[in-house]
Image (cartoon, rainbow, N blue to C red; front, side, top):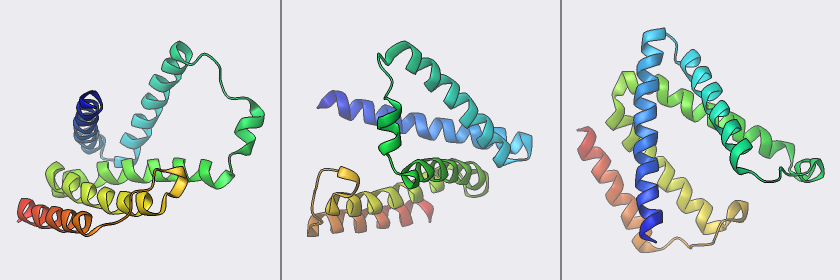
Length: 146
């Protein structure tokens, strides 16, 4: 369990570091859209190489066809929107504000996804303690950004 917690912390640090670097690149290029394009192309390249090295067998075409088109479109659109928004907003309000607001949004939607078990996620019902945790987080975000 400690391994997964540490890995999650490192992933969070990587997201913030990458977002900050890419927002700066977007500022240098005068285009957050171009910076997002470059980030996604480079990310795709890295994942492609990792797939060649680590994936033993790719999913069959039949398996890929089973996945509804809206899921394919959703992951592409949501990913591009999230990254593009990060790179656009960070230079305007700062990395701390962007990440704190983003984290609040992530926690709220995560609680809803978990409560309903959407997309085959493990069910974890909304409780008073979770609601109080979100409210505490919002108070913390207010204090961070004050």
